[in-house]
Image 1 (cartoon, one colour):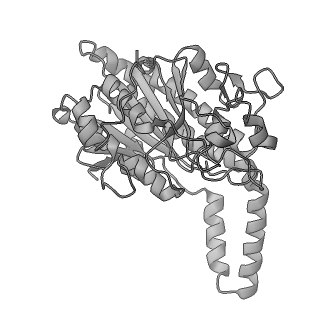
Image 2: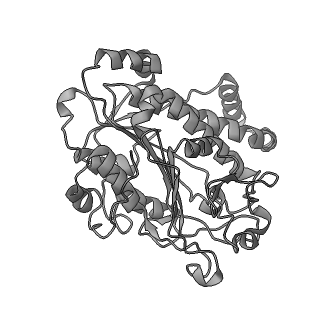
Amino acid sequence: MNATTIDRRRFLAAAAAVPLASRLVLAHAAAAPEARFAFILLRGALDGLAAVPPCGDPAYAGLRREIAIAPPGATHGALPLDSTFALHPGLIFLQESWRAKELVVAHAVATPYRERSHFDGQDVLENGGHQPHAFATGWLNRALAALPASRAGRGREAGIALGQNVPLAMRGPAPVASWSPSRLATLDDDTLARITDLYARDPVLSVRLADALATDDVARSAAMETAQRGARYGEALRAAGAFLARDDGPQVAMLDTTGWDTHANEGGAQGQLASRLGVLDSGLRELKGALGAAWSRTVVVLATEFGRTAAVNGTRGTDHGAGTVAFVVGGAVQGGRVLADWPGLAARALRDGRDLAPTLDLRALLKGVLHDHLQVASAALDREVFPESAKALPVRDLVG
């Protein structure tokens, strides 16, 4: 894996905030600033038809019924993009980025994977090939190895993974650093654990304690989940921004989020998915703040393993599908555009009669960013980063 773990205390002491990055920029003013790139993997299959609803498609509202997002201008309506597409009303920062021409939305996107397994779909997305388990290394690590100038002599890794583990996309020949927030138990949790151990051998008390804890969890979990998820995600994105803002820091960062598997009670403008999209959106705002001046030379790509069904299911959710959305956002993005060879949502246009049909290979989007923003050579992209992908032509003019 070649990962170097960065201790939380070292990070806070040496790179805690953007002001330090500002001093480093001044100290290295003579050096040309490097481009920065962040990849955020949304694990669980984000519903692209909810995140970027095609309100202008005549079949959309009928397919989505009670979870359909109302068009722009309506109560709780979507945020306008163009005559066909809009953003979920929880994606306020992304719409601000759209207005600033710092956001490109790619719709009807997919990897080459066409089955419905989260594990295999994520493996294909991360390994950069055509099928699950095709490679033991990841496309992003191979892209680091193909950067035009070697950073080996600079005493630092070109990439950093933020989270408990280094994901497959970042594993490979190029050395990468890793960092994760501390997860110290609170006093209350520790006390409860000790009590649980103490009661473990008593058949009556152990059952009653377990029942009480389960009841308490049910009562508080719904209220706490979004706050906890937001705190963890926000901390990781602030750290990513602080690392990338440093002149002597990594050039590339990756992190992932979970919780996008919305089979039941997905909600529309409000509800389960809306809360998670709000957390995602707020985290991106925090990333921009932590990057500071480095935002102007940063591109962030958000992608998921596959999309969800076009129609709502019997439990007011959506099932595993195919086409979905990807976002390209950042100060270096030439934005204010939706990239979509839109197949439509009419019954005859749906893949297998149920899914948004993919019309854009996600690898083409990634190749465009890696080539134009990080200057990874086309030959390396076709053969090494995304093997046997020459037919997936890079999407150009994504960065300014």
